[in-house]
Image 1 (cartoon, rainbow over the protein chains, first blue to last red):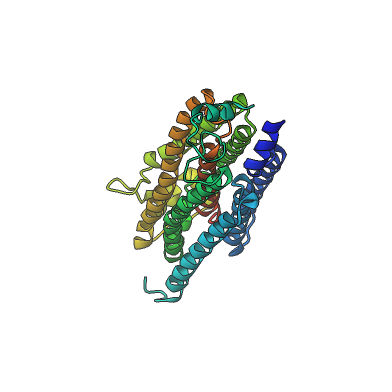
Image 2: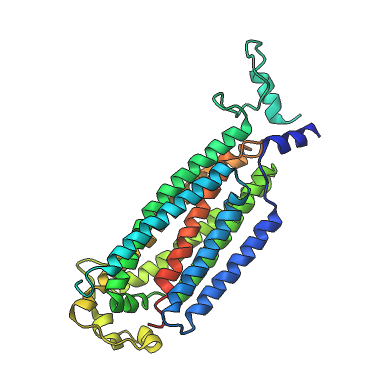
Length: 105
Length: 254
């Protein structure tokens, strides 16, 4: 009994297997969706839909499989700051390359 | 009383320790287990963010070159087999699930479950690499590996590659544009190769962890190593979640 209490006090949140199973099934469904979407002709929206589904899957993995939803504020802030910095870097680089020297590559 | 507490007692019998009892795995520079676990998780995330930047550079290069050499990237990506790609995605997501269950087993001190989950993750990881090697083999056979033996035939004369042609009806690429398919395959091998290297490192660590788990190392309360490895494994999964649509899927209709 004391052992149980000690574990609850000293250990962080333990995510239950049912949540993992739910996440697993959700990921399988989104994988099916993204493959199915690639067989539909959507023009410029094909990459957008594929990347949107990829982002949703990645967020689900980060929040539940990687426990960020149940982590400390420090971890949440670290992950958010890191991804934000990454998006700024990739966004500005792409904006520069895509808006300069049209047709001269 | 748990094993770890008993162990802590054994080691701290000497009365010269003036602080409270604690498990043997609590390092002395941490106040308590919670702080130690937070610090370890924080450090692991910092490492993973450097990895995000590393792979991010390659993703950025891919997007820029795809934009520049669009027809070449579209036709080159038609060479990838969506069946193998989808199967590999399923294998990797399943391995992420078994790894997550392994973390749960460690946290709830289920040794047999932990060993089983780690072995399953190990096998699925090897399965991923096996499927990847089949795909690499196809590229080698068709001379689509960048270098001296690179062949433009599938792109200057798409009808010579009937399996791909009957599905996509690609038009021949002219001059320089056909050459730029080599850039697609350079990035393809760099990105999937780096991803595969991360898988190989992960599988090696998994093998080590299976032995340690069988000896009961992770089921007596100290789960930091399993948790941090779980973070690494899920990160590798996330990289594939983006590689798969970008390399295999988005150019099917163009």
